[in-house]
Length: 440
Image 1 (spheres, rainbow, N blue to C red):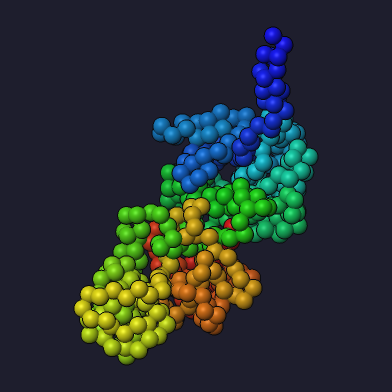
Image 2: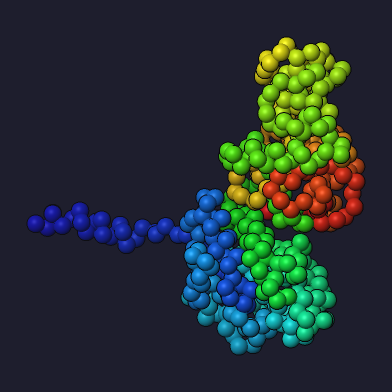
């Protein structure tokens, strides 16, 4: 009889001592922009769930809110609350005890600005709140937002005060970030238009909610990866909130085909229109390898798509050019395909945790995606992913303002586009938001 109890008892003891599976715990901390209803949280949770992060738990003392059928998860968004007030009233420690977050998303300070508080007072409150977070969890990760713009009719000074606060946040974050408990700045200000992205100059409209979710996603995924996660990073456009993306490395199916068509038609002022008409078609070219004919060099002129071998071309072998995936091979007769190394144009796309958006920066200046590198073909032409060869046109450098410089020009979201499929081109550096890139 006793022997018969041994196995159940051992199993029970093992269950007691075995560590339970833990899910990452994320707390959204803020005011009504976060909590009333804060539908960006529902959009963010949905995007995480659809990209392999369904195990993330959004935590907080405030219950989920209804966002048109999609529940917006638990949070710590309190309408009307100020950062300074949360500190004075010592509210955060109790919330932390119940929520126990690993990552905090903080968009906080709007009500301070509306009440006339200066940047110094808000940053002092941030410092106190961060100290409380670290006392509750010494390895907490804080993602702190630069606030969305304000344009309430009754507060003409508010837009300037937001700019002042946002300008001070990066320096505050650098001063307080540690390897063990990093502080990461998330730019929610750039590209947000209070005229169209809010319904009252303060609170996000549906379009604004989508922008908030889009901007939170890349740094949150990076934070979830942890210190032992992959070193590859996304390149996120400051102006667009979209990621540099390789269609060839994205399991999107039809979505990628549609995006390639958009890319092919967008850079028409400098690209051969024949090449643009059939991006990624794999069809035969007309005068050489690549969709747009190669003439004497064996590479197309400017198109974004792929081309098969030509019917009449006799060009000599050369490096990949924008018009074709082939790095230069002479035409092989009508309709015949040449198995050559793939070179293709990159684009902008919604940020997702996928292979086609994970780049690594080599010490030699290359921006790598697997065995391929970003290649600066020529000014005003699409930027390619081509086989890494150590060439000078595959060497890039990050400038202090977030510009990515190659061959004396900058990586550029063409036409300041913010739609999926926007081409990424090489352009004269001008410091505009469509040439500034964050890495997460």
